[in-house]
Length: 394
Image 1 (cartoon, rainbow, N blue to C red):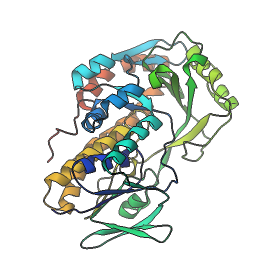
Image 2: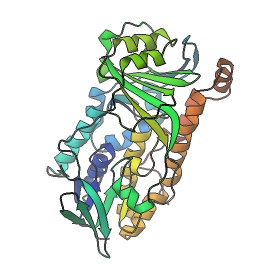
Image 3: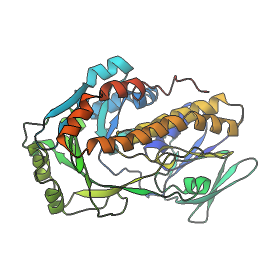
Image 4: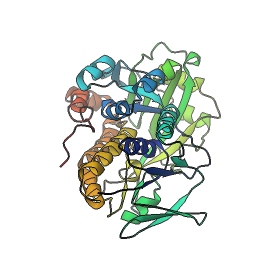
């Protein structure tokens, strides 16, 4: 199989990981990004062993360890009293079980690391100010069209352009999204401003009727990341940069645990963001003869399992391996898709199921739910144990 050039739409985490994996495998790659500057929005991100295998293979382990935090455990608590319902170990135990550490870091830090890696392999790999508007497949290749009237030609096209993917829309059409009922608050707060003795260096999930809050540390423990998924009938746009009044956040979390109150009180009043979470059911076919998609473009995932970015990183590795193994471009894309559909669908469905688990309507139901299941055993058994570099492809 001869592939001279692979075009990638989108220079987010998935697109940059794909670019580095493909370049490392000696494919030529061009990444097209609509933004004028290569940057990332958002806040905290979690990178478990299944994704760290890929990043380590790219030589990024030390850089990630330098800016990340290794949480001691995953802890589930009641929203008001803080009663601990369950915990399972991370940090050294995660690495002992799976061969890679569990890291929590800022999305922007990971994005910078990935951008530097891709550019070290090909300095001009990313073209900025190039907004893709469509593509045309030919017998021998694919042409990507841009809003400025220009185009780029390659042998394969990979859409890594997120929720509102232009590439996905042409392959599978405009699929409906259903509002989950949750608005997700997002903020980061310098740790030295949070006066609370209750926040260990762990991944904390506070759960209650009508919502749950997730708290963990970033940047060597100097920054605290907070996400509060709270049920609301007020539907807003799907945007990580939509600001909402701090007073509304304070009202929404009235009666929650003192640790949550301490974070809210320490937040910058004009830096509180909220976006509406929408559910999109898994699809089974996301590839054509010369075009495919990855990450949120292929399998948009709610944040209730903390695996959205990890799935995009896994995708990048499996796509690269498929292109090296298959005898033709179309067979490679089918091999990639075949080996990702079921796993990513399970992640999407488990994420949705966690929303129900974390919002059970009574304390008794929450206690019973966690008494009858081991979250750590479940995730270690199928989620974190997956290695995209060695898993059998069939």
